[in-house]
Amino acid sequence: MLKRLIFIAIVLLLLTACGSENGAKKAAEGYMDAVKVGDKFDAFKASEGFIDVFDYEFLQVVDKQEIQDTRTIDYDFWKDYETEYYDSFLDYKDYYKELYDGYEILEDNDDELILWDGKSYYDVYTLLYNVEIANGKGEKLFKKAEITVEEGIYWDGDDYKDGWIITDVYLR
Image (cartoon, rainbow, N blue to C red; front, side, top):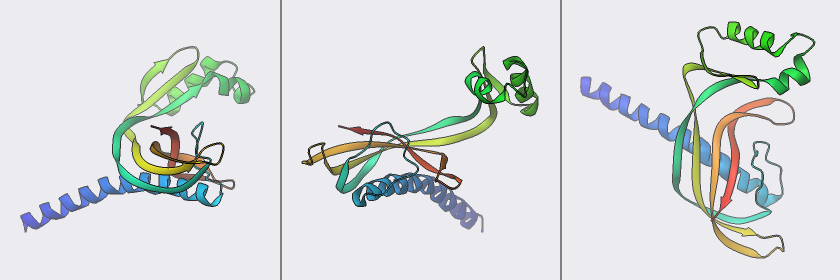
């Protein structure tokens, strides 16, 4: 009985780890499929992407990182949107320190306040693909592409969605 419980626990752990990687791959490939047919991909937040994609093949996970999931209280946001509610940036930060009581203060300066609950992380994957893409002249190129994907929230035009976000595309 104990061996069976240990086996089930190991399988669940492996499925959870693979699920995260599969979500990242699904987002990267969803982006490339959208570019193939000329569709928009809402979760694309990289500065540059592909002009056209003809084909792709997954090769491997190049890197996986766990990043602290922090809350950033920003001076510019206060200045642009919150000055009618808080007399000073210090008051604004004090409100969030009280709201997130028990959170660790990672940074507290004149520009920002960064808070962390001490336990939450999000995953960032860098995935390597062989890609057949077009350059600016429409010529086919064969390259290796590193696509960085992270867990996050994005706007789909109607609503905020939890999911995977493309944050970088690097051609080798």
